Length: 194
Image (cartoon, rainbow, N blue to C red; front, side):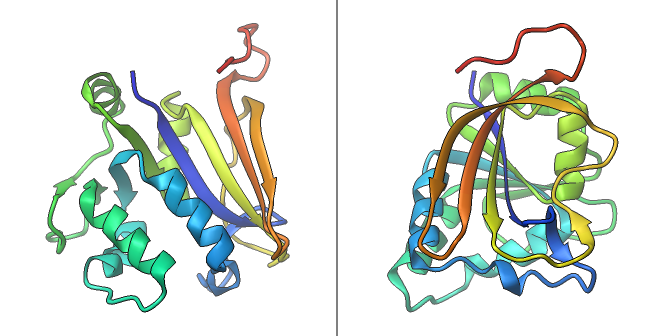
């Protein structure tokens, strides 16, 4: 079975966006971006909430000058996308379908039948997937910034066992951490081993 990964860029105090909804402080440099590209290459399907999709849809028409950005645009365009939104009228990118509700059973079935890994983007949608026990790995790029509040990268009220699988430090001070997601804390199950 393929994996469902939740990837995020977060401030040191755990926010994916600041109190004003901005995340410009998290823009990756070329070294980090190239590493992200290599992580994203095996992704066959992206699962997005409305806001994350609207941010990411710019990659469909972006004519990037930097090679790492052009590379990412190609990776993103080649993948399928599923957008979960009750308010979005339509999607604007190819290879994209709109779903009105996040259905954990349908995502579980997608994991069982897909031939490539899946990625879930956006803290709100990821919270639903984490609560449903669907996320296999959590990839976080911790940015050397403290923003003091905003949108949390990880949801409140969900407690999970995590096993560190990989780590990397970049010249910019960004730290990448890759975790296997085990069961809820205190449920007596063994930690996931990969």
